[in-house]
Image 1 (cartoon, rainbow, N blue to C red):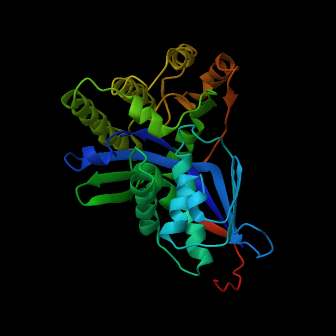
Image 2: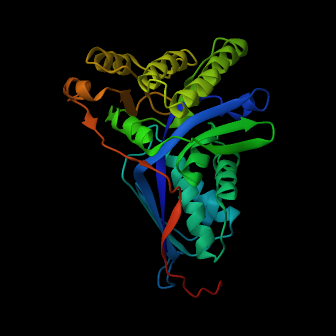
Image 3: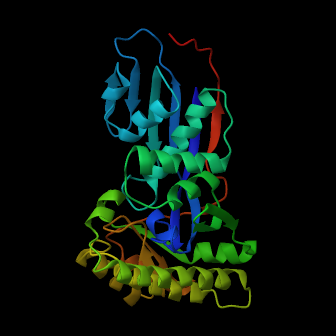
Length: 333
């Protein structure tokens, strides 16, 4: 039996510039971190006592004989990719899917990690990220960027650069005290709305490619500015919150499905209660709102958002890892 533990991510700046059709022609970058909410993938070979050969348990249960009959596209295609057979797979998570935290990509990374481990193979973080991107974007034909798979695989607080040659991961060099202060100044709330990221991407009708690229270049420029705020100990950390407000306003203009009137009202309520800035996490359409709030105003903001679920969190650095390794003898039929 193998159990993997893979973190979810929150993206602060650069979202949208990680889309392949954009960064192959223009520079892309995101500033993001993983945090202490995880998904768990439990995999073992299924004993041959049943009239089915594959059993899957996620939001539903599937029992099939033929891999082609699996309804979950990522599991089906991952099993084909790695030639997996006679599998029992169970998925659990600390937070709901379709919520803007890269949950599907964390699952893809954790599943591939578990499959390789079950086969007795070690795979490094870069390969896991690349194969999770290939699984979701090519084999499953799901729209979206590359940042989620990379963040889930590597873990930590990073700047991820994108270009014609692929991606590079650069940890943000920040003192533990400043990083802790940033963590303490961020409040996260669940809006209750959930949507597939790929559906949001499809629904976003952009006025023109030129307008879209101009906005994404502005969004990209904020990554450099945000990194400077974090790494310069003499800079006011509150500027990070002000910049979040800027990137959210830019992000809203990149597509008609990024926000909704309900989310806009929630965001305004948080700002009026004392938040300096914030944004909706993920592709848009719902999920989690994050606000940057000075400590003395956090009680006011939490009261103003009392009808939403507050989610405390801490940054994490581990990325995907195997937390239970009990290999078993397996002879394929």
